[in-house]
Length: 276
Image: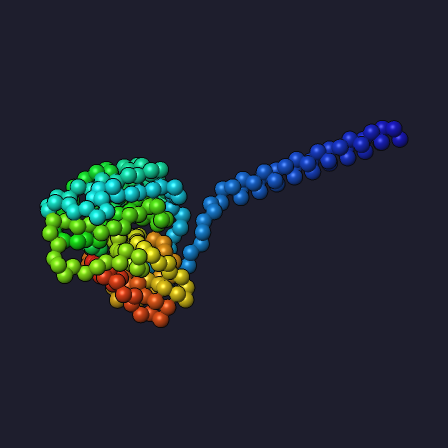
């Protein structure tokens, strides 16, 4: 009986050890599995005639990045010709590659992060230093500047942009007044020509000032090659299914009833090209 008792105790001990080991393996597998699954914010796609738009929110974040234009100063008049622009930037490195998955799947500047400088909602110029000159015709101009990731996606928080009026040379007496506090829409991307793999996923990005967009409220109406999409989130949108050749994007800032909101730049149309 003594031998049987010892044998029974040994068997019970082995069973307990086996159960504990199995539990540890199960827990370890569970942790490994959960940690290997990326956490992403799901975003609903919109699709028409083979063209798909998908907002994305998983870009590298720079919540404390700040930009301020120091030159031209507010209220000053720059001489005609090449206007000097200077900026103060904190917590953001120009020329650094932004990283992240989107830097690999979309058009990405090999020069790194930069400033988008937009005069009167014309196509932006990209700048990789805090000081540069830019030819601007005489008159009063609206200048929007904002920080951009290397793949041209704008930083959208309040401190990441600067909007102001800039006077160059002589201005006409009848120059209309631009309301810096009114709702405004500015166009950023897409732009110019896309080739090779950059044609598969093209980013649509715009800039809003003094307004927000939301379901049931103010929205951006995007008409892409004749296909209308209502955008209710201020985010970059991935466009897929675009044809080779020339493509056209029209952006409009509209109210809850679909009526265009007054503003000199709240309706803009641009063309860009895709090439093999």
